Image (cartoon, rainbow, N blue to C red; front, side, top):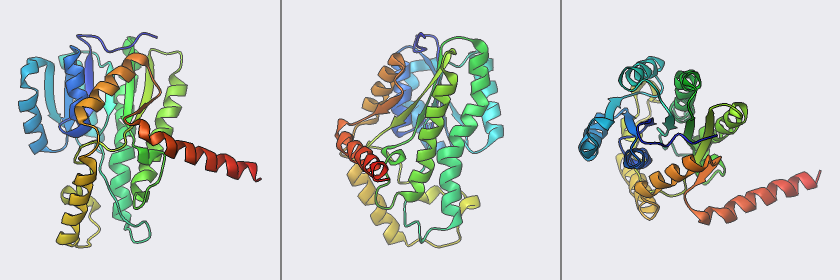
Length: 276
């Protein structure tokens, strides 16, 4: 099938006002596409409008809560009214909920699942019928993580949702084979983003009622920012996503340094299966 990354086509990017999402949006605009940047944070949307102003009317920033199906319906209506057809759906919004699984609260699981997995499901539900309906080449790519393939340290809550994103996109790609729409999953390693700075904006609906120690929160955020600051830039990842969409690649990785970890996981699984 032909790829959908052509000038004049339209892309929609959730979590698009910062980090990887903004990098993807910039790559799509550079390729001549129209881009809808959707995000829940008004402050990030304001900065994104300024950063993307040179693209003029080809860039549109809108507020979207990926957990709200009514927001998704309104977003589809905006796309259809302004550009008629959506060709690329980048389901990138996510929150970095870390911590001990043993000491976690139900609210931790509910928030992580609602955004990291539910946001992807809602996006597919809102736009897949539209994308199949217009019949032109189209593509859905969702951002999982290396945490969607490997559980690291205190990432069990996060990985539980991100594993689901990998499974969803693998299954969707299989089910869409032979149609005009394809699917891929992005599994970034370290990227210089704010993914773990979201605890302070946790919605009240997902508040466990436990007061988090401010100093501990500051230390955790500083540690995460320091680690991620050594990773890829969002613009680099955006370029990688562009190339993957052109190639219709099933997986997108941002760092070949993850290969030994994937090989170790594969070997451990095969060793256990061989012991049966």
